[in-house]
Each structure stands twice: as C-alpha cells, then as structure tokens.
Image (cartoon, rainbow, N blue to C red):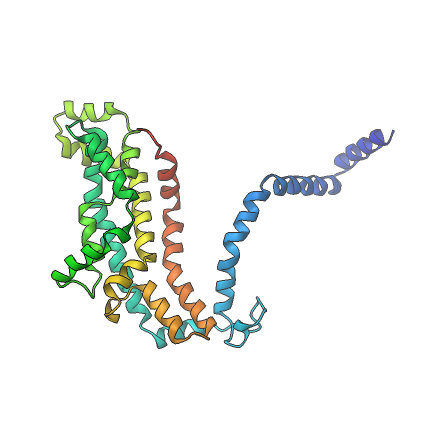
Length: 299
C-alpha cells in the first residue's frame, strides 16, 4: 500500500512539474557516483592536497606559514616578486629549459632510429641489442657515476650541464624501449607499400612511421622533459660548484637553505618551478595519454 502511494505521488509530481523527484534523482545519482568512484576520489584528494597546501602557503605571511592555519588570513602575491628579487630565479629556469629542451631533442634524434631498427628491421644480433637496451634500463646510474665523472672532468666539462645533455645523443634506454613497443603495433603493410613505391628505410621512417607514431613520440618526449626538469642528482654532481649553471632543482634547494624559515617564499618559489610542468602537461595531455594507451607490451 505504501509503495503504491509513493508511486502515485511520484507520478503526480512528474505530471505537475514538481522539482522534488528531479532533485531526489540527481541526489541519488550523485551519491551513486561517489560510491562508484570513491577510491579514485580518495587518491585524487591525496595527490591534490599537497599541491593545494603549497599554493595557499605561497600567499601567506611568514608568521602564518608556521601555524596550523591552511587558509591565508590575507593574500600576499608580492611573495612571488620577492622570490625573483632575492635569487636569480629567472636564470635557474632558463638553465632548466636549456637542459630539458636539449636533452629531449637529442634523445628523440638518437632514440627514434634505434627504436625503428629494433622494431621494423631484421638484422643479425638484433635480439642481443634489445637485451642490452633492457639491461641499461635496469642499471643504476650510481654504478657508472665515478668513471663518467672522471671522463667528463678530463674533457673539462664539469661545472656545467653538458655532461647531462650530451649523453642523450647516444640514446636513452627507456625511450628506445618505449618507442620500440609502439612501433611494433604499426602494421607492416604500411612500410611494405612505401618500399614498393621506391622509398628507402629513412624515407619510410620519416614519411610513414613517424607521422603514425606521434603519440608515442610525444609521450616519450614528455617523460624525458619532466625527468630532466626535476633532476637533482645529476646537476648536483656536475654543476654544484658553478651557481651560474644551476637549474631550478638546485636553485630551490639553495633558496630553502638561505631562507629556511621563510616557508611562504619557499612555497612561492616551488609554485614558480612547477608552473611550466602543469602548462606543458595541460596542452599535451591528450597526446601523452594516447601514447601511453597505445604503447603495448608486444614482444
């Protein structure tokens, strides 16, 4: 009886245009959506909360930054101006752009042909070369740090970022492996058709394969750019004695050491350092996600 009455009321409300059923339905759908994606929402909150705290702290005064208040009592955008006045933040960012940009460009220039050779060509020793690439992915960089440092010191390149940029001309193991896995998913018929039309292997790579591999190239480039932009160990090893060559990672550490109690300014400098990463990812997110999704694990 109660069920029949509620159904009649709902039908009457729907015919009279009452907003109550719509509100109840929207509320029920919203609660179901929260229940369905509760784990994803919790993970998103875990990742977003530190970023939100960082941004809010960057607008606080130095006294409030040390308290338990998470919302600024008064907003101070001049903190960002003061960061540039205290340290050469612009030079640090330009050094990071130089480091990340050249390393990414050199990596693509050298890794794409190697990945193409491992994925699309058949030659003696191909399996051994692939195993060596995988071994290089697993080799910790600390194992080779001493001989590499001695080598670059003999070339008189320590005190700069060139020991971190130039090795990318010889390829990057992770990038080669990622590109190879994507190239394996491209049907061989496209390459065969180009060869029938008279294209050599370089023309097949440039005119046929690369246009189809743009998502994987974008994803690989973003991986390298983000890694080099955030790299701290490499610049600390090779460029720590020359402040003019410091990237943003070393600059942030030096700024925090010089202004240890000014957490509002430290957070402002951190926000400045992270803005380029967010901007690049926002514009290239579609290509990045597509490249990751299309890159399989085909052997």
